[in-house]
Image (tube, rainbow, N blue to C red; front, side):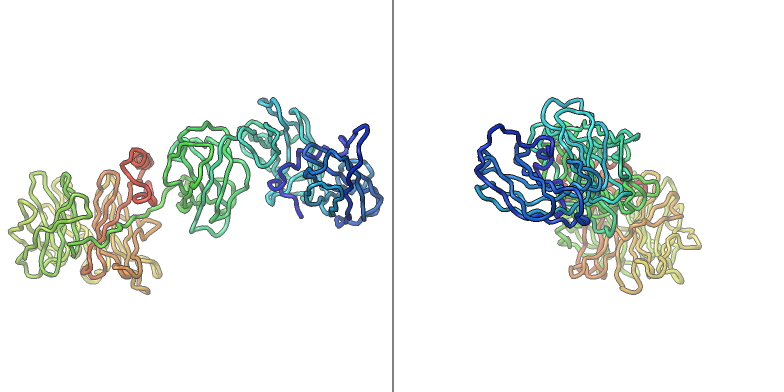
Length: 636
């Protein structure tokens, strides 16, 4: 059995071995402990085997054997009923103490009776020593323990210190050349080195780095390994971390003094356990921070095990950030599945939340939406004509009638804008243009110069109209771009501005049905892509600085159909507006006959947007469980 430091609560407090054996002047011999000793560490040939019986208060008695085999210890009756521990040492060189090359072992703890039987195996080899100074300025009482922790959890044999100062650890079962970390603890209340209790202090060997825990490459003798015990244990934090992207590497959790890990300070040091695997429940000890502090919880998946945030790693944040730190903080759960960009900056992934009320009731068709003051207005094309509806929340709509527009083919897809004078302009995907004074009654239908402007979306910038639309043959599965000074006569770029993806990608068959908004200086386009092999249609995002040269979002598609639901295997006809700190989308199923769906995403294109989003949650203006599932990629 290998000794795990976390499972031996009192171990280090009790090993006062060989220098503090029982010295009662007139003991009453009222009990015996007997059993067998086996040595499987090397082959016993020389030296002696020393067996020590310990209790909570230290060493009780010991015996030296000439060879492995049966033993008997006599015990003072004052210890009857106590929980005791049995340890053994094969002292190969006859030094009457630990030295490199000796072997150690132990038996299970037991309650001391008049006659007790306990066996032990000596099977762990002492391979190295680690020595240095312990520094603990805050120490006033209790015990100080330096110890060695390696990734698999073994520790060294140590003697606790009542004061800071020099120490020596004897390391067992760790091959020379292994990287190990050296820790120290101040057990302020004398409860035992592990588990820690609130008020204990922790420190580690940092070498010349000052703050980073440095591993050492274990040699037979390691000197000058100084440990500064200066971090106070104040609280626990626990929860579950998941990462659907995880296949290798390890995970870490950190607390920050702000919502942006790129600029905020990591304000806490965590104690053991070592890095997580995913998915994993965790419980970490928090040091160096005051209870009641508002903190932000982040975690990252260190994909390449570099122990630093590098491109290709993934991050996540606790959805209810920030938290007010308490002594015990439970259910801090999050998904560490967002990306780190090429500069190593933390980014956030794009993910939309679909409404639980999908499909929306009372409206069926292809939507075109604007928010006019506090009113959402929707124009939606059907096979029977053009319809209009209004809503106060974008989800619950009141249909206000349909109009047979009187054009050669009934409209299917609208593009609508409202001018500063309050008038409206309309473009229809079968190549017609119209105007309206109220947005409901359309007059003066005029054919436009583009024979087939399929799925148009229009912006007006100054006196220039800009339209993105499905192209006609031979590129009808791609998106084109046209401009106009009057909205009727258009000049079209000769080449598509957004093309299908490479073979095998999610949009290798179609890249159509654009919806474009201008967000600051950046154009953002949501479009439908279709995979040639599967026939599945989903929604993707592309961005541009000029409306002509577009870059597709690396994590497309951003919204996909939920198989087996009303959406089937296709969602399409996206229409997106920006409303405050949210993007809001309305979309249809494959044939636009079942209903209209609604989805939303917080704006996180910059970290100031992230801060605004979090502030909205803190102020009660946004509900995380219902609204925030993940974030829009910033600086896309």
